[in-house]
Image 1 (tube, rainbow, N blue to C red):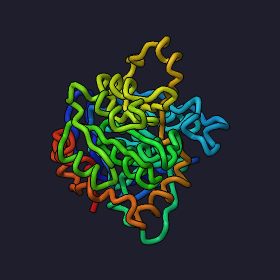
Image 2 (cartoon, rainbow, N blue to C red; image 1 turned 45 degrees about the vertical axis):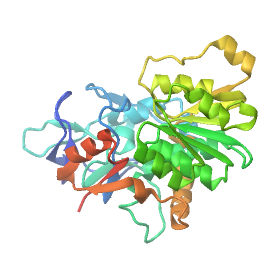
Image 3 (cartoon, rainbow, N blue to C red; image 1 turned 30 degrees about the horizontal axis):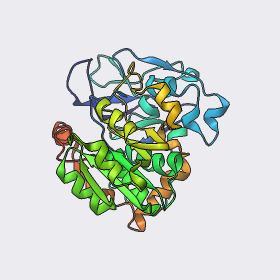
Image 4 (cartoon, rainbow, N blue to C red; image 1 turned 135 degrees about the vertical axis):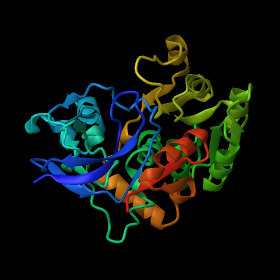
Length: 342
């Protein structure tokens, strides 16, 4: 039996988001019908937003079922496809409820959760403790998990080290909180927005720097051991100027990882000869390089301890206020809007 619900959709490429009544198909195979309490948002201009042409989700392979789902060879096809799995015939999963039968593709990132109900891949479901504040913690599954995992899982800086974090959106702020949790001695936060730098200081940054400073590399180096640069670096903005600055300000032998992306087709902006001669490590991070079923409950526990106060960077909106939520996010007024479905 199908289920009628309300969702935020894009009718066609280039058109604005809007509320619409849709009809979800009956869950099959590896799917679960989930009531959505709240959902965090990312910018609609984000490179992860799929193209207008839906592509099939590939069948899972053994590595996808391990505790390293981010390393699955079919990751892009399974998350960006927007169609249900091969076993389900790669159907859209929903239609418009206006009787005209227009298809609504709802398998983006395994769930397409911008609705009051959603067909969700079983692999995307995480059991959380009874009494969890689902509204406040709704954004944990994307940028916040990525930023915290980038620091904890990918970089793993020891307490006596230094880390510089470029870009203080949800990913960067989560990285600051993670570095503070690890008690990293020197935590340098870099951004364009003064209020974000203030928040980063409250979250545990030991130093804050204006990303527009022409001598930013020198400023980062001045704050680190022997003026060599940060031993660990998280680039979370996806801006190529920030990328180059972050790489230059990473110490010889240091480790820089990217969680931000400018989109497909952009090449890393560093010289291979310089890279070899400085023995730097450059890596990327996807999904925080974590196993979500263990890492999300870990972040929930940090929040319970007061070590992951993401409500300080969040603001709640109704579905009808979606455009305002996007505006406030893109203007920098709010770091992580949360759409609450009541």
